[in-house]
Length: 177
Image (cartoon, rainbow, N blue to C red; front, side, top):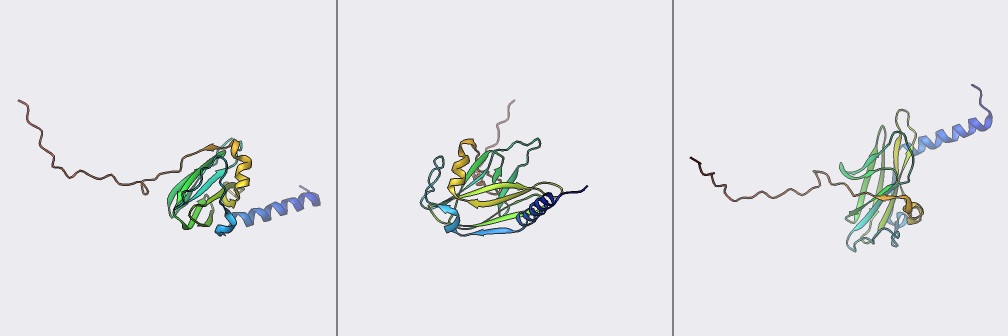
């Protein structure tokens, strides 16, 4: 199959973008990823905590490709096309990751009272598609927020509180004659 120079150049550029976007993690300081003005549908962050809004643009797919954002193995949010979820977090450094055949990570320095926006995208992989997460400003979220549906942050058994067990003695069941 013979390709013209324009097609070859476009394929080479796409391949280069794929290789650079599918590997490695991004580090983001609070100054470059946060906004003190939350989106119109996102409530302000609590004054003693930060919040991270994970979202994906709506898209049609015959086979849905969803993934889970994790921090230190704890499931934070399921990334589903056309949805967003808000995670309230402690201030400090947070390392989020998503993966399929390749892992992609994002490190955020979260400040109290600040809201951060993280966009989930898909790049082509060799066998399966690869999820990517990257920081964006609230304007990117606002531009597509009317098309997004809210999704609750995940609660996993590791993060769920353990119910207290009763220490009251159990009385025997009386015998019935």
